[in-house]
Image (cartoon, rainbow, N blue to C red; front, side):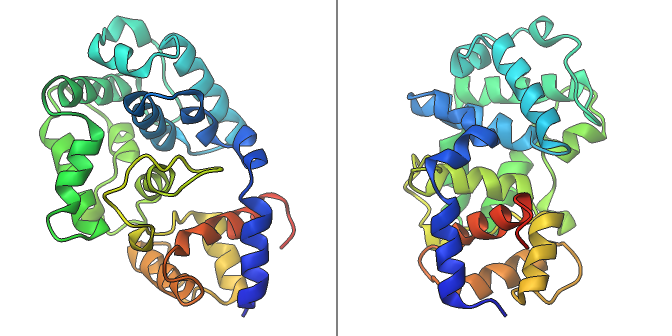
Length: 250
């Protein structure tokens, strides 16, 4: 089991502004307007899978298409503007549907913050909030979509790790220098660790995770163990665990 002191040291080592340049969080850091930040963060988190070099290159391509004006692009969305854009398992039609839903959300219902806040107020848990958010996206699908859409917007009822959504929430809730901290309706103590194969592997080797399946129960187990070290901000250790994996120090 890694010591509390060592984990605190590692979190402090990796949670610096230098982290931003090689991470998908670089995209929302380009903006100052809250709506631009949350839209760019949401898109960056749902596309951030596969090779880091590949998805950062693809996100850079997408933001160039958007002319680095996320809210304006969403409000005036024209599917022809991203015709042909695709990445790995999601097809062009899958991303187009995400933009159509965002268009309705920002045109009529106040945007992502309002949606997530409404979901959180149901019972002040992340899981219920995610169910509300994902139900909204699924109920607003108006065109044919493939499995890529459901990969970008996974269903928490399937009991997966919900890594993309938990990453997005970390960005929105935790304070800088790395995270953006523009949402204040969720306390950092409620956040859940963004779990992927690298984080889970290193967490098991560190003695922080026993469950051998990378599902939502594993997310809860790892988060609870990290809360024993810092109950107010357990997800800060994402930097320690992730940093060790990326830099090959573990």
